[in-house]
Image (cartoon, rainbow, N blue to C red):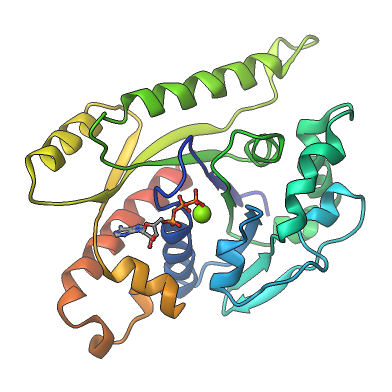
Amino acid sequence: MTTTKIVTFTGSKGGVGKTTILFNFASWLASQNKKVLLIDADFQASLSSTFNVITNQNTLLDVFIGSQPEVRQVAENIDLIPASPNLDQVETLIQGKMFREYVLLNWMNKNKDVIYSYDYVLIDTHPEFSMLTKNTIAVSDAVIVPLEPSEYGFTQLKNQFELRMAEFREASIDPRTNASDIDAKVYFIGSKARSTTTSSRLFKEELESIPNNIGVIKFSEIMPTSTFTKVAVTNMTADKLRSYKGYKDHLVEEFTKLTQTIDNI
Ligand SMILES: Nc1ncnc2c1ncn2[C@@H]1O[C@H](COP(=O)(O)OP(=O)(O)OP(=O)(O)O)[C@@H](O)[C@H]1O
Ligand SMILES: [Mg+2]
């Protein structure tokens, strides 16, 4: 019952591959017979639309207005609490509330039987360190931050994120115990790394110097194809995969490392 791992994919920058990695990772876990609950905490609702769920009814917003979201089965072994465009209301809805960082945590505590029936709960976020994102971090065992190559390097983004986490941890210290209520571990994963250029070699070196880096997902056209066709790379038939067979093996290798890291927390 208590081995459920809750993981948020987030970061300080948009378009780094959070949703694409999450969709492919969840589908691979499901194919390994793991039960996965996805929570879409991004009002852009990209993850929800990857599963053809586009709705304003019984979504994650309901958690924040005191009603019940619907947990929908979207694939074998995968359920989803969808996002909706009106999820951006959360910020103003909970602004003046006490304990506003813990609304999702409270809901999860009240729905333990549902939450702890899954092996993994994976949460997608929008790229802001908003109150909604803080709610997802507050329930998480791990936070995964994808970093992509950039001409400015990614150290600045990484440091920014770590600073925000440190502030959040500090602000959440319980004066009675002197311990923070935020105990999610932060991990980084390289994303969209090209294998040929000098800058990509530097990117790999920079990544490898980070102690809590858990891997690198290489750049490949098959990744956009997977979300566009709504079929995860690891579920594609040999005919669809063609020259991308090696890339599928690469993904399985990186996802295996990711799973081991999460399981060991
Ligand atoms: N490994 C990859 N190789 C090539 N393209 C990729 C890879 N991963 C993601 N992409 C592409 O990069 C773009 C951004 O990816 P995605 O939407 O997953 O990012 P995101 O971090 O979820 O963005 P947002 O912050 O807006 O939610 C998409 O076009 C996606 O198809
Ligand atoms: Mg996204």
